[in-house]
Length: 369
Image (tube, rainbow, N blue to C red):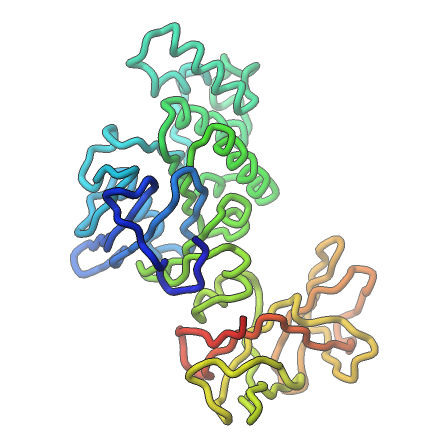
């Protein structure tokens, strides 16, 4: 369903759709709109994420799907059933929260069993053991949450949420309290577990690398509106909006002017590409330049001064200063160890030209795909 569009196209009939369908979903608190007319279709069993800065509406959207917030208008349909105003316990969803929400006085076995307390004890015991084995904590069943690491507690929260076999698992920034080094790996682990169990997942996060590791499709929200719903690759290389271009990945906007042949003339030379609709020769624009678009090339006649550098192991991320004062980011092999103030040869190699009108603020991009 990957689209390069401001909203998904070809929305299904919600009543007959097998996955999750949001239609004109809106939530406002007085005059403040947290979510505005959100339309979205997500296939059953798929993994998707809502991504954006604090206050963009992603958590409010998740809470409406979970039944913890009541929509102001619009609808939520899951597997053909309208759950817009259903109670949380009436919905085939479960939630893993940011703070795990484990009971500190109960051991791990009892925490996982809590959501199955209405079932027969023998069935519950078997299900809890299966869930703990699934998250590789079978030998920790009688420990209290405080005796486990943060990553292990997150697995317990996952096992408890999965035990009732929900149709959709909601994850509300579940990795934010973990070390950065653990987040991406745990996101991949949880995805693998859900895939084995045939359960779809919705992740809410402000961390793009968590979203990239977990989701097949990602929606970027800003001020309650969905700007783009797409694969991680397209969000990075083909952003449809200036905000998306700035929020996803790293990059700078290099000033330029559209030439007669559609090429963009910049301080670093011409950037090729067909002229998108709405642009004309002479237009003042800015071209999105990612770190991987700037190639370290000692043979290039173009050079820039190393203003900052960050060692990344196999690579350096250089911040380069151009004669005009403009700055670029460049990824280069760590075998090329350049000092601050040193000039290095560079050249542009942009496969996907994305540009915006200079001074236009947030807005749609001109792309050459």
